[in-house]
View 1 (tube, rainbow, N blue to C red):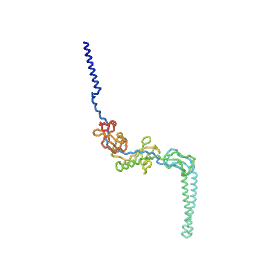
View 2: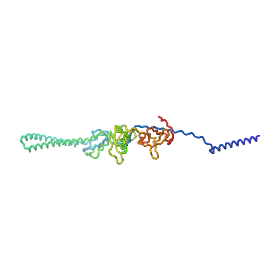
View 3: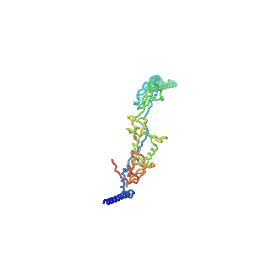
View 4: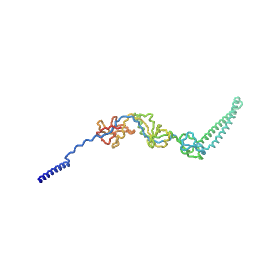
Length: 386
């Protein structure tokens, strides 16, 4: 019995091993097909629906500050500097005394001219009285015509001498006044090139000091002539509307990136184009009460040139570039299918591009999730979060 039971056990175990080996062979040769995978869900994206809006066209132009008025102080008479009456780097007012030139020789000249005037005035009175007497005598035929003419000529000469002496007095007084060198304009005065005791000459080449008016101050900007022509044509055909009085307003960004607190006004545009750069110079004037702007500073200016009343804008992150560098956007149509559409861009305004061609009002432009989709793919529109 034991031998029979053992034989049955061996047969059963062999059969079980064969069954397991057969099943494993079927799994290894791939004859059994795996279960079908569930379809992936459509990617979720964020879109913006395009509408028309009023867009102010603003140009960013580079520029440099320039002094509003500048006066180089030079002596108009010669002499020794007696004193300097200002502090270098300080603010001076129109008419304020800057230098005093030794006036002694000019005071003597005034005295000499005044004495000559008094002499000629003394000579004029007898000539005038004699001419009056001869006026009566000539009517009575008591004097000859020649004597009368000589008396009249002497009177005219005496009057001319008085007039000449008066002019000489005025000239010497002007020279005396010019020994006081005063500020011709208000502003900040720089370093002094002369000290007390120095000899200066009239109209010398070297300036004694320089006064600069810094409030207000000019900002000279450069704009491409092509951009200016394009704006003019757009204004003429009505594509762009004039900004009116706002077109003269200029905002300024300083070298450190901060905004200047005061707005300026556009004053003029050069009538000629720079041949080397192809640009036109624009000049704006800005108030500068705290003297934050100094001549020669590099700045950036923003000028509102016109208004697009019905512009279509797309966010800058929605614009893609093809291999040729052409701009394009992804549009989600009515069936939530993605399509690619080429566009023609105008300019950047803030964080958006102004689009001239390629999209219209009501188009849904994909702005988030661009890396997850391809043209022709189905997508799900996500609700924007605040």
